[in-house]
Image (cartoon, rainbow, N blue to C red; front, side):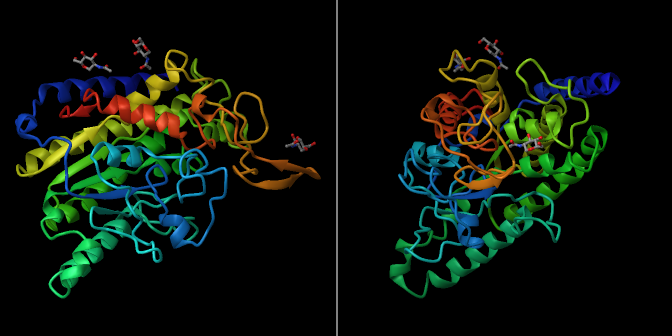
Length: 380
Ligand SMILES: *[C@@H]1O[C@H](CO)[C@@H](O)[C@H](O)[C@H]1NC(C)=O
Ligand SMILES: *[C@@H]1O[C@H](CO)[C@@H](O)[C@H](O)[C@H]1NC(C)=O
Ligand SMILES: *[C@@H]1O[C@H](CO)[C@@H](O)[C@H](O)[C@H]1NC(C)=O
């Protein structure tokens, strides 16, 4: 284990040297944070209702309670990072691609992100059928329908993007967390690390399909510190998958999960550099969500947050207040008694909303830090 840690940190170190020696010639010519439309791809971190529409499933209160005042298809008590980013761009919240009623408006973009989705193609037993490759295909279908409809009816342009928005729009990505979290169940850390390049290759092929269709502005989030999510801590530190119970750091986060996330991020960052070299007409921005979230967890007191690895909406109390059998908002029979996972009264002081997803307050913190410009490459 220690050898592996040493090896991995050497790897990290090398990569950092490589990155810092590449100075992007495109940095100064990059756009400001101002786009006519946004096309988003990802998992529950940026799903604005895709899975609730696609699977007909509910996310009940208290989901949504602190902003929408009702469930809003988001795995959060309020707004997600993508919602705060849309606000910062002066654009409306993104409608999910699969929204079929209520006259969804896609003029300023469309959201293909679906809770539970992975970069890798899904297995037959996966909860979410909309892996990254399918989201990209959905986008291509969306675009071809838009281009077909635009000349037919002048009024549709109030509901769908103008043709030039596909070239000038921003393509945002936040995906990979479920690939990593899922991989730790069957795989060892060594196996997870060895598999990461396969995941990155799959991501690259989706990005290339989008580039070939005319996308030029890419905004790519890296993945957060998965080892600090109460669900992973509960499952791997004390749960049935527990391997090495002492393998947590001083914040209570799983070292192995965080290391896998960091290695994934280094390879994702390297891919961004490769894309810039390969396609001189592309704007690729790598967005370091990991550092912001990890800083929030490490320095939570300074930022006005309480225990960062304790779920606000969960069951069981204690350090994590998380029980995988009792989902936020649900009541189940546990050992013959009724157990309910309720929301806490002060979610604004919590980092974790439901043990897997961040609270609105934490999402807002992430975006405010992000907009300082210091966490993207090239900087904002
Ligand atoms: C916590 O804050 C200190 C002081 O600002 C900073 O040096 C450190 O890097 C932060 N920790 C993390 C994990 O970002
Ligand atoms: C249910 O009972 C089992 C066995 O007595 C115990 O280990 C477990 O902690 C109980 N679960 C809850 C949620 O009380
Ligand atoms: C961002 O970087 C600038 C310039 O290096 C620095 O002055 C500022 O304090 C940084 N902001 C944050 C929030 O770290």
